[in-house]
Image (cartoon, rainbow, N blue to C red):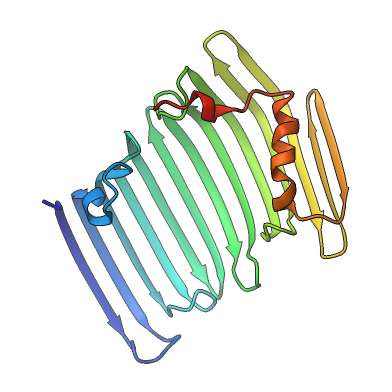
Length: 239
């Protein structure tokens, strides 16, 4: 079976684009998301509740409120628990907050986005209390990470990225060692004529300037970082 789902939804003015009035409340108990999406190896049972109400289906005009509570969700071999979300939107400006208090991943995320331009402007703050990568099946060996991330991205264009990203209080605990890093910062400025990228971290400073697309130099940056830090999680990923 697909599980139990209760849905209560209404919509008015559906023939007046940009002026739709809607509300919805959904409750799912052990919903077989894998069967519904035909991806049983990726997702499985989900138990959640959520509601949304607003005006307009146009992302740049919508005024809405939403909240959700994911009691449990099976994703790629692990059942995540206790995630709460809420957010608002008004004339293309979105705010969102999410918290998770799972035994193997605990975090608080605050974010906002302006969707009125070609590429969104995004600002976010993540407080990662703890994540156990081994128990979540991301790594074969024990690895637990703690840290804070602050991101300010005025234009989220993957080719011409303008962004300031800072990681603080980073702690990586492995079986035989614990690594502590104070601050890592990444500053990217770019337009069609020139780009700069500055990376500052303990033991490593990098500066790139010229006419390039960030998506084209990402593999080279990964190789550079790997010379100083063991980030090759893929080779340790559990089968």
